[in-house]
Length: 421
Image (cartoon, rainbow, N blue to C red; front, side, top):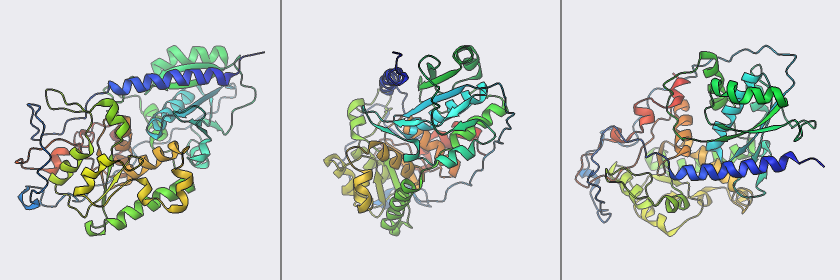
């Protein structure tokens, strides 16, 4: 009896997941703001100065809700595709570990399939827990995905029955795979086996523009795959829209604008949130985020969305300053909670967080990593560039909001700026 290819795939995905989790611990620090008054001696600011008057802060005259910069539009063109009658092979893969990874995994798979002139099989979705498996259509719009790639790569909606362990090679490939890597490491195997299954690993979570820009056609394929293929399926889209609308209603005294903060306590515990001798940090806790927002001029009427799944007592520090602070359970429609907040709904929760953070008026990533990087890319593409990187601001500092804008935006060094103009 032959080996079930699903067993091979599960083993590769498990190894890949542990490598990614290990890499998370070694990620680079937040991109430092342009200039700010962090105490570089590394001393920690006390958080008992919550009674500072807002009038004592030298905040930008337009306030923290000032208008966004001008919008952008896609710069890429949809490359044509000449069907190769001799190409019979398939490229298969799975989406894993949440939407911030899905974006990159989709991009690499499309780039590889295009290069090989192979047929791309729509992936399934696998969570971090054993048995946590979903169809692509449970979260994303299948028809949108297929139509967006029409004329670029061939796409089929289910894995062909003829694929087996005998003719399917499982390959680990680096994120942002290059043509040279494909030619040297993937194409020979594809020609030998006829089909490949990809498992993307992440040597880095850096989403900065490459110093070596790919040729125009390849860049267009990558841009299309990253920013033009994934849309939520209608029910999930409806939940996200209802939550965004609820947050805007709750923040009506701030012209309907709200802040989304990516803070997940399990990751803060894992990283420890220790600072380095130069004052740089990889993550910030709720109390530090509360003071950061306070000193930038956000007042008590501002609605704050936290990605932490359930309320925890450590979030009280931010709610003390911003009473309109909510997690998913506080603003999700009651009739949707059983499906989208249940014990087996972790993938739904991750996707909801990703899209709410992408659509908020202000985004504050309390944790450095791929979630921050890919939310930033999606926001840049939609013109929502108010991404504020936190810092411990001394109580007597003169505050300029622009000093804390993400370098992805202020330096225009995110790879999204290769795709939008």
